[in-house]
Image (cartoon, rainbow, N blue to C red; front, top):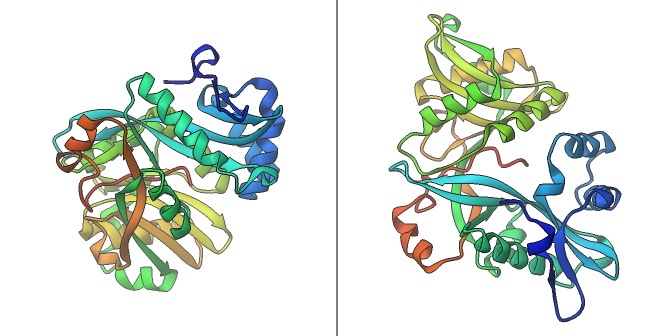
Length: 316
């Protein structure tokens, strides 16, 4: 589902060209990333060294300069019955400041949806970073389709909630394929997104680089009860991007994570149907667009049909 130069080059009436990225675009893409997302050079270099970005990236070119870019990540949309529909997550959508407020990102999103339709991928999704972006993407045909429960907890709160003896659970760092199996087991019967092992490998590298990891959550007899993905945001803040455990284990699992990765504040995300013992609130997390009538009609019976629909860690 990756773009190929010979069948993805699209030219608009004003001379802009949408095309797949090429190796020589790298420095321009890094510049746009830094200007738009503000990440350090260390992370930007890491990103482009650890992804097959030439195959994943589409760009919009104006007068020989890259004006906008986005990434298309292959994913599977899975409904509560286990039926799978191919989809693509649009990620790292950005426009160089010199070209902003001209509708270029919207044009590139449209080009990408048309390209994906030509490859029989009729569903795209994305994760807006703000309420303003939710409003923006609604105008492009996207709607809220995935939800998350998010709690912000101080370490003292986590300690107070974990009333079960520590010996019941343990954490173990795991490899991506094992994490992916545990993740699918925990989410069986719920509408969700599934990711390739390659994406989990990238996420593990990000987590480890930050000082955290992918974890299995197990009983003292090594029975797996769930899994968690954590990243350290700073010395005082950790984000648990995914916590998948039965509610009776959630507080203790967090306590173990807080002991392994000490911080003052923890942002904790669970599926909307889980994590009730942690408090927090449910909010829209991802948006979805169906590009074929058949898919639009099927949405009520498919993934992304209700608040149970779960996207996961989202590469944010």
